[in-house]
Amino acid sequence: MRITIDEDKCCGAGQCVLAAPEVFDQRDEDGVVVLLDAEPPAEQHAAVTEAAQICPAAAIALA
Image (cartoon, rainbow, N blue to C red; front, side):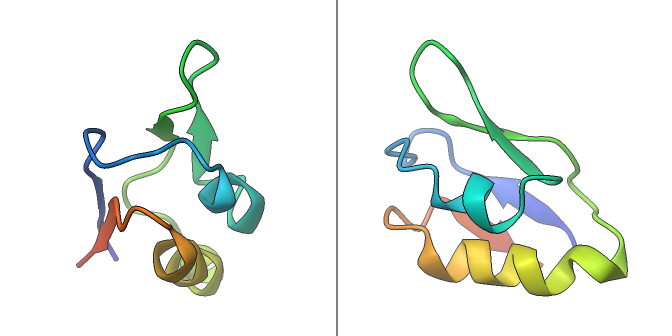
């Protein structure tokens, strides 16, 4: 799994951080997503998939 983020789409809702805190964080100044691990281990895949599905801005892409 490879994750890419479209920071321009991110609305700072933080749902990704709640779903997969080991993979996503937010910038303090504006809440935009910060990708901590672009290729997370297999045990994180379910949480990352959930994060991508619940992102209100569809800013997370998985390949």
